Length: 394
Length: 98
Image (cartoon, rainbow over all chains, first blue to last red; front, side, top):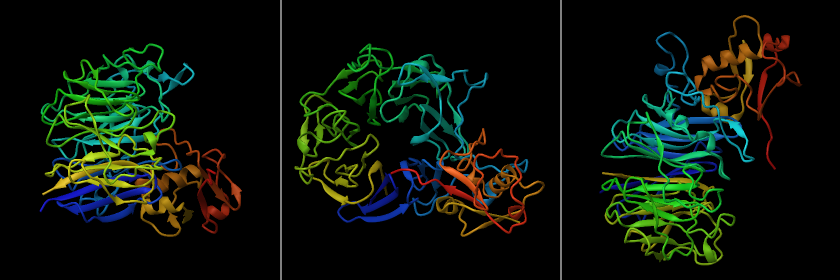
């Protein structure tokens, strides 16, 4: 029978939750890296036992961890004895070295972005928000970082190199941090055309490359953000999350700071599909594994309140690709609920029926084994959940 | 041998228990001890000082013989009792937060 393995990153460590295909009895392992913030963990689509994790700390900075056995054991890539020394005899230990590329060959001398007060501010690496393993090669993985940039490793996370054309394409000096920092939080690799990738940045917007990261351009036409000086500007939008169904690559769904949107032309233009949502503010957005027109969001009351409307935790599902939404509340708290669900904290498995998962800032991880019709907590009392990913294993 | 005490989280990362003992060639300074530490334990690179600038991370401090050495230039010789291994160099995580 198939297995679901849920990878949970929290403010104080990582947890791995596993169940068989019924998804009614769960085993919990962890905390791994207790005391550290785990912004994200994700497994390779071509080697599910290869999992990458972003481990961070205000004291000790960034660490990249890798597991080759499905999360049982972990190590910083490049720290095994056979990997420690370069052919020249020099110690390595560069798996956490994220240095912005300003070289004349591959980077551009772009050194500042817009700060909160409108002045220019130097780019400063803070942490890795998102890790996206390649759909083709377990040793290739992308990292979305704060301050916003995308890095790539081709050696299993041992070393990282910036795809500097994203920062250098021209609009970089206009990017500015959102309230949570200027993070690149979404990376989608087109599963049928790996040279095409989408990224999203708070608070700059969405960008696309069609040539593997050599060139990039903003794809924010149709976004309307009342909180910025020019509501329809080319960049400056606080995009919270983008999702794509792997079988329909030209259709994208977006949860923006306010508004839920859809693009039918690979991001060239967007239109709003908020429809009858109780609130169109929120962070994550997800697409059903088997139906590309079924979309999930978690409405949040407002950008200053960051808890569910009416203190009722609801997932909203559209079966029509947007505009018509139904509230899914069975098994979720319907009173006195003041948790948030962060942008990385939802996932779907590819079992049948499709499983849907989300984690809260209150430390609960909820699972639905019936596409969202009903929910039950897997765990209730973890540290605040930062990220949830799920692997469907044969 | 130079004795070095790491914070708990860095001991876990380096997979060591208790004090470390390092061989440092040449003058015993903060820089030479940290260089030797990172050579022996490459996974600690970037966690104590910046990969490129080698600046100390803001929430870490260096102590020895009840002296705060955090703001000393990296080439400053460490106290003789540290250089001969009588006293350890302490790398300490700041008590930061509320």
